[in-house]
Amino acid sequence: MMIYKDKSKSVAERVENLLSLMTTEEKAGQLVQPFGWQTYTQDQGNITLNETFKRQVEKGGVGSLYGTLRADPWTGVTLENGLSAKAGAEVVNLIQRYAVDHSRLGIPILIGEECSHGHMAIDGTVYPVPLLLGSTWNVELYQDMCRAVALETRAQGGVVTYSPVLDVVRDPRWGRTEECFGEGTIDLRTGASNVSEYSWNDMECGEGIDRMTLGLAGVQLELMQEIYKLGKTMIVVYINGRPIAEPWVDEHADAILEAWYPGQEGGHAIADLLFGDVNPSGRLTISIPKHVGQLPVYYNGKRSRGKRYLEEDLEPRYVFGYGLSYTTFEYSKPKLTRTSMTSIEHVTLTVEITNTGQRSGAEVVQLYIADIVSQMTRPAKELKAFSKIRLESGETRTVAFQIGAEQLQYIGRDLKPVVEPGQFHLHVGRNVNDTQWIELTVEEA
Image: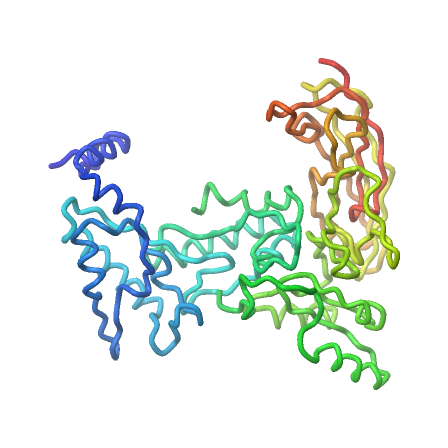
């Protein structure tokens, strides 16, 4: 038995042996990734592999396939000509069997699938897009979702998932805004928490296409204005992949529910919120500007005099971390276990949160840090931690945050993390503009 096929050998030994046996052409072939949905043909339930794909395999020229099971307008794969979950698994088995039997070294193919918010295949569950997932501020819930997506994808033979997108949104006109978690680097915590463990069907037609404005398209605004004339309560539900800047709606709507792209259960979720069966607890992870002319608008801009406008101030319409609830919460003054520390020590910040309303609800307690004096320009505030807690009416709970080098450092001139001695303001609150702060002094170690 060849060493690379011997499961009793270590992975390193098997890889080294396999590479030693491969030709230069075969190694280059491992970098080739054809579109997977073009490898097969289905005719009345009969599935066959295409001759072009077979020849590529025989020449050692296929390392991976992209979107073998993908179904959407871009691929042209539909319910009529696409693969059910069962048929998809059978096709992947057919592909792998051919690759093992007909390539010189019997190397299987990596099957990569689109999984930004669910396995993008027929019979796949459609979950909310990452921009909405970020708005939950619920890392554990997202991990549960990723486990479910991983099981669905692996059951059909997929071993590589193209998700999540760990970009930071600076201009929401960008066509892939909905695929990101938000505008702050800590928003990536939601996505990065799953990258090491878990390696679309409802997207708008403009997915991947930039926009010039952030206004409503077509006659949607005119429709709202006509409805408003009826004198009825008007609640606006946005189903969208990027922030919408419509001043008239902000001024005239009785309420706005930002649903982003909520997935296949979105209708039920929206109904539960509007009828009061569920208390909303989402918080924005992206700033919503008053006007497209304000862009770029994001919460963690650097301290400076900044830009000024004749028509408007600099504040977005809805700030980072903002969100409403059917109950109210009250914050105590934040406290520190001590008000000074060195860069190698830790202190604990605590704050008491009380549900002062009549309903139970969840609050996202947000910790921002401001480095008052530094050698390099720093953001006015940066989100460094958060805690989502659920409180019954009248209940009080203490939330604690550990403060150490990880929260205080930034990347210095030498491209290494540095914690500078000096004063830091630690802000705790319900959004970036609604906080209380306490000062912490960092001394030389």
